[in-house]
Length: 217
Image 1 (cartoon, rainbow, N blue to C red):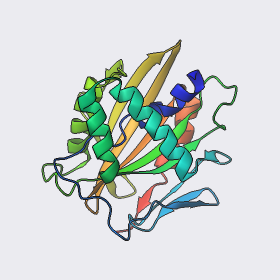
Image 2: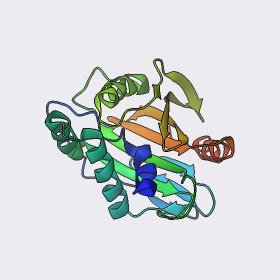
Image 3: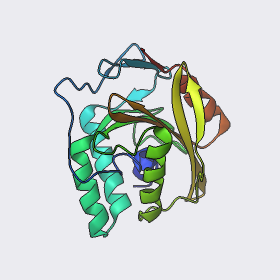
Image 4: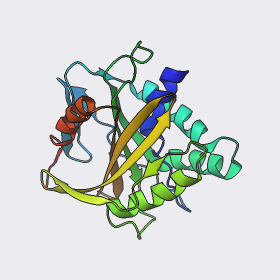
C-alpha cells in the first residue's frame, strides 16, 4: 500500500478542476503513444523524450492509478467525490511513466504524468497560471494535504511554449516527496505535466525530459 500511495502522488491534481457543463473530448482527440522512448501526441502536436528504460503504464493502468488518487483526494467528502466523478468527462490521463515497475523494492519511484482537461467552458482560464490557481484551491480542500504549495506560479518557456510552474512538497512516512506541476493551454485544453521525485539526481533526469518537450506551431 505504501508503494502504491507513493505512486499516485503524481496525479492528485489530475482532473480536479471541473465546470458547470461538460464538453468532453473531440472525435479526433489523441491520448498519444510512446515509440523508442519518445511520447508523441497528434492532437496537441507535441512530443517529449522519456528517460531510458523507464516503465510506461498502459491506459488501463494509468486510469486505475488515477482512480486511487481521486479516492484519496475526496475521502468521505461527497462534494469532492461529485467533482471527481464529473471531471472524468473533461479530463484525459495521457501518460504515466515510472523509473521502476510498480511495487518494486525501492525507496521512491520517480515518475512523469501528463493530463489534459477541456476548459472550453471556462473562459477565465487563459493560461497555465489560471489553471494552477484553480487546481491549487481544490488541492487545499482535499483530504490529502500537501505541506507546501506555491503561492505564485513561475513562467517558463520550454522550446518556445509558455508554461507555468507550481512547486509542491509533501512529507510522508519519512520521505519528502517533491513535485513540479507544469501547465499550459493548447487547443482548448489545459495540458499539464507533473514530475515527482525525492532527490536532485531524480530531478535532473526528469527535467531533461521536460526540457525536450516541443509543440509544433
